[in-house]
Image 1: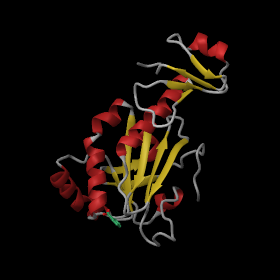
Image 2 (image 1 turned 60 degrees about the vertical axis):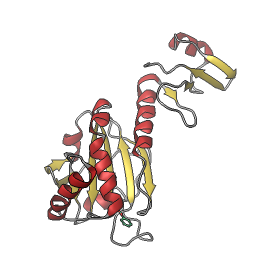
Image 3 (image 1 turned 90 degrees about the vertical axis):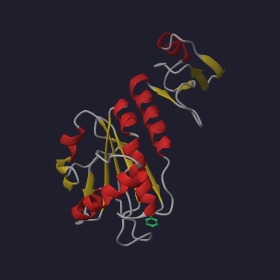
Image 4 (image 1 turned 180 degrees about the vertical axis):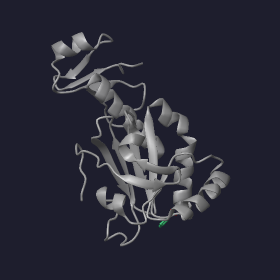
Length: 211
Ligand code: BEZ
């Protein structure tokens, strides 16, 4: 099944390195990130899962729960985690799904048969507290993801959700944000007391509301 932005993220039960989970129960009211990696005991994946563990406090600050997934077995995940901890100087505590029956991979379209018939690609899905899909990114097996970019998108999504603003190209936390076209300038001036800069009637900025 292909999954698109705005779809409801499918629920599932799965075995993970942290025990059996029901996805929705695991998420509760939090934001979620579910990401696939091609295989255990591979170099790029080792660095990615290490970085995810290192960013534990950044995810917690944003109320994001993280899960990884590959089609490897639970025994494989459990054997690999100490290597990640040792080589990346972290403690992997987030669950890694053992999707050896490919149930979750097929729900989330993590196997792209023309890239690999058997392994999951590097896909990452951000899910909102409403269980809707907010972001889907897919990288090839040979390119490790940029988790700073993942956090940047989460920050942008959370600003949209809380304040109804958008973020411009290359936006970074603390920089001005964009008043969305659906908000009139008159309403924006009332809504954003830090001020509204009108560059064009359709291009309006306001300081980041939560700073
Ligand atoms: C890796 O994680 O290093 C990797 C996995 C599959 C193909 C290429 C690289």
